[in-house]
Image (cartoon, rainbow, N blue to C red; front, side):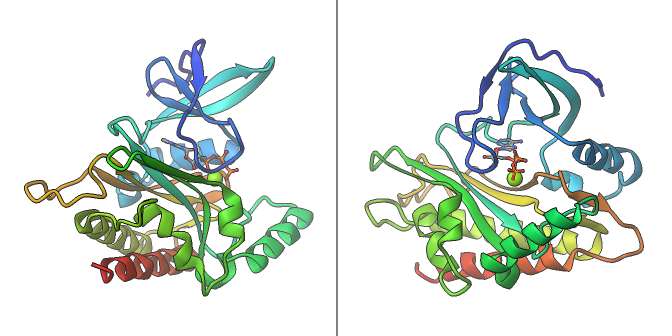
Amino acid sequence: MEDKLDANNWKLLDNQVGGHKDSIFVLESGLIAKPCLKTEVNFYTTLYNQYKEYQLIKHIPKYYGTTVITQDNVEKECVVLENLLKNYSHPCIIDIKIGTRLYGEAASEEKKQRMEYQAQSTTSRETGMRICGLKVVDPQSNTSFKAGKELGRSLSASTISEGFKPFFINQDKVLINKSILNQFKSKISNLIEVLKVEEYRLYSSSVLLIYDGNFAFTEVKERTEFLTDVKLIDFAHSHFCRGEGPDEGAVFGLKNLLDIIESYIRLH
Ligand SMILES: Nc1ncnc2c1ncn2[C@@H]1O[C@H](COP(=O)(O)OP(=O)(O)OP(=O)(O)O)[C@@H](O)[C@H]1O
Ligand SMILES: [Mg+2]
């Protein structure tokens, strides 16, 4: 693995749904570069070097090393990652922050207090989930939808399922193809099984659900397999903790997410 990757030419990622605005870059190679803290580099390198047997690696973007991007005359240290959207013609994405605790081990007392308040005053504490943004493009109905973090902040534990409506029901009120929901169900179930046995803390990480909007809101009888992905991202506050057991908050959030997917499957 190369440590430094050339990053002279870059553009902003078009399809960024969560995180700080205009903070994700696409390099000439097509790979993604994201400004990072040392903790995130440590997380990826520790996984690749010391936890090779962990299944987590199959559920996160491939890591290619680090690079430096100059944006507005400021040099930014970045992790270089696989672009999870590279195979999609019409990527539809939702970013869901998982877990009930949102601060890492290195957080100051002030940050800890702030993140505790944030968890408590949003759906994070009660559901282990918070919607951070979503984007849907449906070429067949020629409709699209975009929402930022305000959506997630406007929801409560009892209404969070509603927040997924624009992701699974298009602007013409058509429910997404059942195969896509079933694929999400199976991929989230697999991820839960992995998180139940491996030992790390994914504080403030997100799960991205991705599907291709092309024909997603139609009944395509001959085509049962759609392009979909369920991937964990953002390890800026994560660490490994052998001997300390699984991340209960993350598992709790993913189980609640599974319940929501199942409730949309029942609408069919
Ligand atoms: N590997 C990737 N492939 C495609 N899109 C990605 C990838 N990583 C991140 N993104 C996009 O960028 C967004 C923000 O990512 P991420 O949470 O890692 O960034 P961040 O700047 O650390 O955000 P935060 O403010 O939560 O710390 C995601 O919601 C997603 O839309
Ligand atoms: Mg994030």
